[in-house]
Length: 325
Image 1 (cartoon, rainbow, N blue to C red):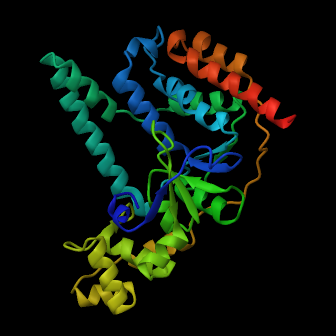
Image 2: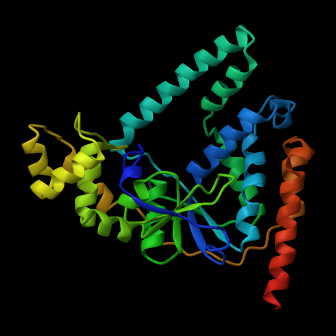
Image 3: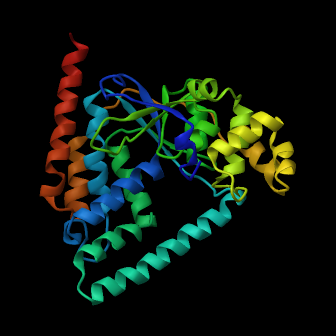
């Protein structure tokens, strides 16, 4: 789910990239990219990723820094991009837009009073995936031979579908929605400096003594990206309510609450717009073309991406050697 309530309920364990070696992960691309984008903006001088025309492409630095961890462990990142926004998510999207606008106002105020640290923090929160960022991200991924999937709607639903059908080994996202969409396993913290985490659906259901439909009902009671929850009901109370009353509607009645779109949210989690896909798992990145695209075409500071490209090149040499041993 979009909020963190399921963090208290999901069965999650730390893993290492070594344990994930040789796997394919359907990565929620917008989720992954946004985290690298905001981090780059927060900690890197804007001159490093701004063209002479004033176009900002901090995403290119983030991608070059983020992909080596996959390549170095022979992990295939299948980047899944969001499609059309689900009608049920319209309110959530509007709220995020409003939050960005408020951050933009505070960012300008911080600049005016000379508070550089606060201005950098707020500027990171104002980032959005512009058309240029969308286009340059896809082109750089193509040059690096990273598989791209365009989801019909929610990217996390497509990731979960690919994991559930065996097209990939895991979904990859920071959101908990993949659990509700039925991904058997989800890898989290793919953008962090520490070890990733593995979120296990079956272990979660066993621990909570619920089935997946009941877990979805628990999430709906708490609130998801697609509905507002019932005031005063947190994750533990929601689990207790579903165990006691058996289903969402009975739990709502017991709490004297109504939720007009409950059935639509349930249906979305169990029958979301997704599609079956095929991709080539043999990745052969054109590092020289990617380097030229980032540095020459988009004026990105060479020093900011030098080590990332070196790591990608080194990973390909090592992967080649491993195939012959």
